[in-house]
Image (tube, rainbow, N blue to C red):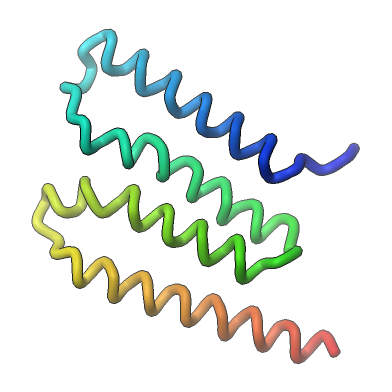
Length: 112
């Protein structure tokens, strides 16, 4: 079986996410907040990008970096609503990206 290209998987994830959001807002399960559209878009896409980086291991740092950035963008709005300050989220993102970069660097050095 041929692995899925990133673009195909990303498009499917975004389409599913938008469809679920439309269903949830149509039935009144959640009240519509325009800012939450960022979470609906970037949350699943960021998770898929991070999973893609781990599963495919080609250009790991690139896909892991953008997956983490998209996940932070998705989580920033709900976490800000419960009181987590944005600088703390940016600090967490910097730490996680640094650790992921170091792990990728060490993995590459050990492979040689």
